[in-house]
Image 1 (cartoon, rainbow, N blue to C red):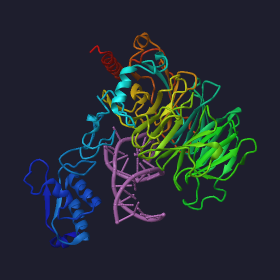
Image 2: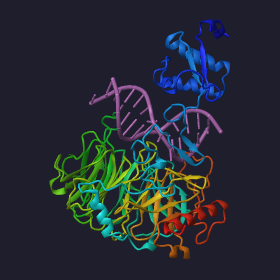
Image 3: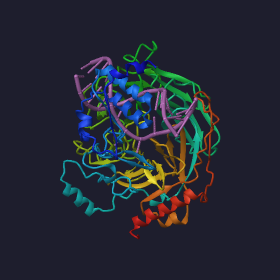
Image 4: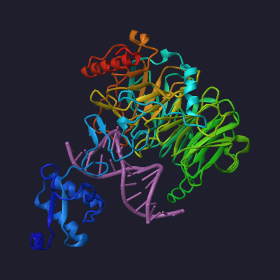
Amino acid sequence: MAPRTRRNAFPKVVIERDSESEQSSSSSDDDDDNGEEPLSDSEGEEVVAAAAAGSGKEEKMEEEDAAVKKKGKAPITISLKKVCKVCKKPGHEAGFKGATYVDCPMKPCFLCKMPGHTTMSCPHRVATEHGVIPAPLRSTHSPLEYVFQRQLRPKIPPIKPAHVIPNQVCCAVIRYHSRRVTCLEFHPTKNNILLSGDKKGQVGIWDFEKVHEKMVYGNIHTCIVNNMRFNPVNDGTIYAASSDGTISCIDLETGLSSSLMNLNPDGWQGPNTWRMLYGMDINSEKSVVLVADNFGFLYMVDTRSNHKTGDAIMVHKKGSKVVGLHCNPVHPELLLSCGNDHFARIWDMRRLEARSALHELPHKRVVNSAYFSPLTGCKILTTAQDNRLRVWDSIFGDLDSPSREIVHSHDFNRHLTPFRGEWDPKDPSESLAVIGRYISENFNGAALHPIDFIDTSNGQLVAEVMDPNITTITPVNKLHPRDDVLASGSSRSLFIWRPNWTSEAEEQKDERRIVICGNAEKTRKKGFGDDSDDDDMDGGFKSKGKKTKSLKLEVRESKSALVIAKANGET
DNA sequence: AATGTATGAGGCC
DNA sequence: TGGCCTCCCTACAT
């Protein structure tokens, strides 16, 4: 009751409404930019929210209290106008409408980051069902030359045999981890074995032929497993680099691990000293494990002696994370690194010292990954947080600017494992890459985030893989070194996608296709705890070889047929 | 069904 | 340089 006694002291409250009373004075810009009421942002939000919630006395008093705290008796303006969730301005709304996301027109395009249009009308996205198209060649050469090349060689280089991308896949799902998946690795010789690491430090081993059996080692690392590599001289062990600052060598049979290096022998002394290991690769020629930390330094450990060789070398800006390392598959003296200083760098292993990179590949934002092409090692593919894949066609050619920039939605989000575009190790033309998509599409009422197959030679979207039951974003993707298998990792689940051969698939094998899977059953158990070494798993290749009968899926299949018809020019 | 939460990078001062 | 604030599609759990 106390407030009532103070009522007379309260300033006048002006209420603005959305539709009924457009006469309510000031223009929308004034409201926001120089309205007389200098409420802080958060307070402003509160007012709007409370008023919108259904203006009771209590809300009013809160508002008044806020104003009194602020500056006494100036009149308060309460806006009941609908406000854009994104930019907080009235007159438009942004956000999901059903499964379609409506952009805020005040912000630059979410896809290409350029102002003047929204994602829906982005020139890099011709139609909603056609995710992504290439950015124009941005390089030292004139655009004409690019057009000329396209005319001369419209179809080359051919991507791998077309049948590799069917128009249907089967999917097996397993709820494997209790934190998001951070890395995946296929066994180099056993075709059905997939390794996965998560944010909590657990390492999973999954034989996806036995979909219900799983093995998780939880005591190897204490936080994020950032990268794993198989030991090139012993299939039974892997190396893993973690944000706990250690490299472990894990025996897959026993789960026992030994630590090759520990950068935090004195434990936690605060964030300024805690070293985390991100990038890792193995140079088998030289028998060294290379790792890099969050302060810009590279370390090498001899795998025979398990001892650090030499000093740490600063390969990226001091204090910045080095998120990726890759040894060239053909030229063992070449190393590629990338990191948060917006650079990827090519190094000569024989002359590894600070500021001695052979080449620096600048990017506009953090570089999530950089890989040499898998067969010749001549090309480079990078994924950067400016929503662009970049391709350099030859490391022996002009490296001043990328041969192509491909606009693709793979934004940074602190809650997601960073996206990494990865080569298909089986593609003889070294042009096919896989990468998850951040932005969603409305697939007949469901907002799905497909996994994109991109022809990096021209930026075309070759296929997009999705399942109506998988609504999560899948930032981690890996293609099998020998089989037509794609492994994906998302928040807590792993997916295995395999072709589901049909006659239609055969007929349509030259066309770009929407690859839809309908059998990834997403059932969820309640009570999934952090520490449960969860027996929580689902699905398998449930309806392998035959079409699911669910209505939803039938609708989507018809949609996919439509898209394929369009691609054929048969509409 | 609303809310809390984990927690990365950019930008500003 | 560091501290603080903001941030456009998260995915869970409660």
